[in-house]
View 1 (cartoon, one colour):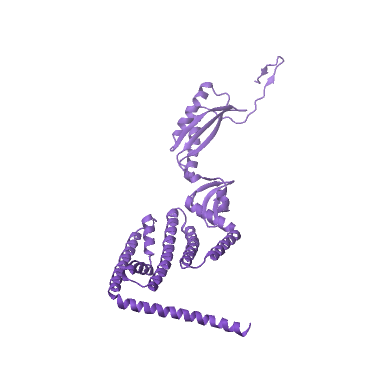
View 2: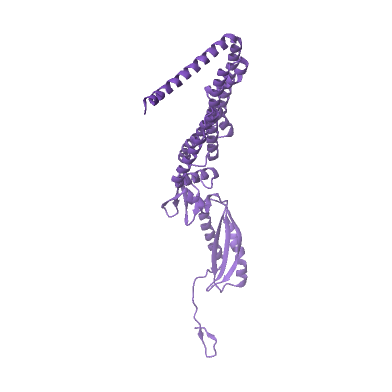
Amino acid sequence: MTIANTAAVAVRPTAAVHDFAADMNRLTREITTWLAGNWLQVAIALAIGAAIVLALLGLRSLGGRLCRGHDETIQWRTIVGRAITRTRMWFMVALAARLVEGGANTPAGVTAVITAVFTIAVALQAALWAREIILGFVEHRAAGDTEKGAIGSAIGIIRLLVTFALFAIAGVLILDNLGVNVTGLIAGLGIGGIAIGLAAQGIFADLFAALAIIFDKPFRRGDAVSWDSTSGSVERIGLKSTRIRSITGEQIIVSNKNLLDKELRNLARLDRRRMTLSIGVIYQTPVDVCRAIPDLLRTATESVDKCVVVRTGMTAFGASSLDYELQFDVRSEVWDVVYAARHAVCLAILDTFTREGIEFAYPTQLNFTGGPDGRAVFPD
């Protein structure tokens, strides 16, 4: 580098500092002249601005009262109240200054400063309001349907993502309104977001599946579910996986994405459970008794609490029995109640058949001896 170039580089910062100092001196002179010539308008504007700030403080206090007493159940009034309470003092002052600066005959330099400050304040305050409303909506949708640990972790991650996204948008809007070229910044944020999404797509897939469980509520902790070849009760809903305690005792851990990709049956939301019993009687049962068996089965079944017969009748001629089928509903979603009801129905049928002298069939073989003419000869 030559001596001339070195001198030019050294002069540029000095010139920039000199220009900034000159601008500040000019702005100071404008403010001094403005205050000296418009002190009455300035005083009135300050009084009106103070009244505006006090009114906004009162509105923020009203938002706090809306939140009070609604901590357990997140309602929309609570969400709105929380958003109002996040209104900052610097936004109130910037808004008041923006509203009254026209009536105070402010010079161009002061107006530009107020406009810039107001732009920054509005963008940041809007981000705070939007974040509070989004998080409140998430809590409102998930309230009472997931365990506190899972929803707490989800809210923490959602808060981080929402905060980053909203304040990134606010920063871009601020720079754009201040005259900065943000095209390169937006392109960089987009490329960075794509890279992060591709690198962590598996984690994000399970995270969004967890959020889908929180919002859509296909099941909740304690529900009995049947998924693929697994049946059990949900023990914990996490951000990455869901833990299911199978009916055989072992804990099965399934990723949230895989859990929602397949058909899942929620057995805890049944208002009834259907039971089917197959019953066989011996071939020696008289026809009149066979005709009466469906009514006997219906009476025995409906004598048990919460049991309603759907259909019953003879279904087939078996190898060693006359086969009947009984279908009945137990009006309960609790499996222990259903199990006990099926036990009671079986005992009621056994008692009825014993009282009526109806014999249950079991696998038997009967040998016949053929005579010279081909007819069966029964042994003595």
